[in-house]
Length: 83
Image (cartoon, rainbow, N blue to C red; front, side, top):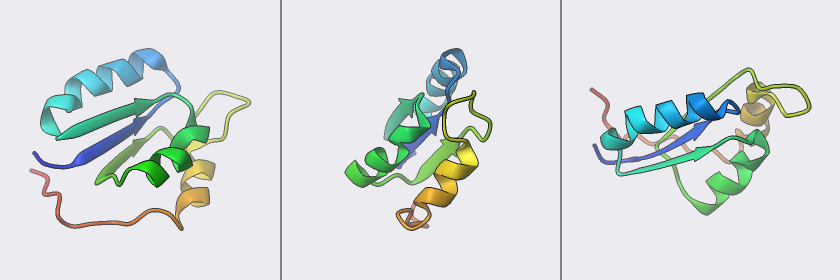
């Protein structure tokens, strides 16, 4: 499948498993474990899909905070077809 995927999860084992599972399905797959890096990632590259953990460990922004803080930056595109 064409498209760029960003996976954000602070559990490194989960992140690694998701990358291994989904990498063959996308043109480009990026994984980060720190939600504070989301804004810099989406400013550097345009993603078709963002898989975002909504329950990060303490002392880190929650997934919901990262999402609501970045909604001005996110652009949704319909060119990536799933299925």
